[in-house]
Length: 126
Image (tube, rainbow, N blue to C red; front, side, top):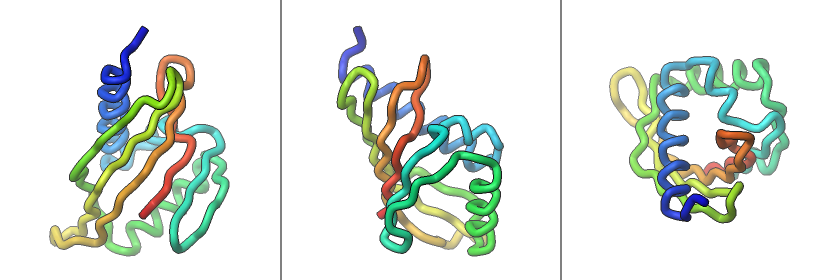
């Protein structure tokens, strides 16, 4: 049986891998999300998202139109809530090509174990 501390480290590693894949703009980052997941933000409210190429193409296009070139992970902290449920809180800085700050945000991710890996089931953007 995995301890809470071990699960927290596993979740932090899961997020770090996700951030690397996201920054490479590798289509592989789709697998980090459940087939249907929730997003909550102050500008969009609560939406249910179907994890498909169209959604992510539109998402990345909008991000790039604002000048995004990469995201830096400033802080990551994770907790095991149950054997198959976890929470990850991240602080990130999104950067433009000239290295100026596009935005700073906090992400709160709810995760669940899906087989031998984790998936995001909810993202709250603050």
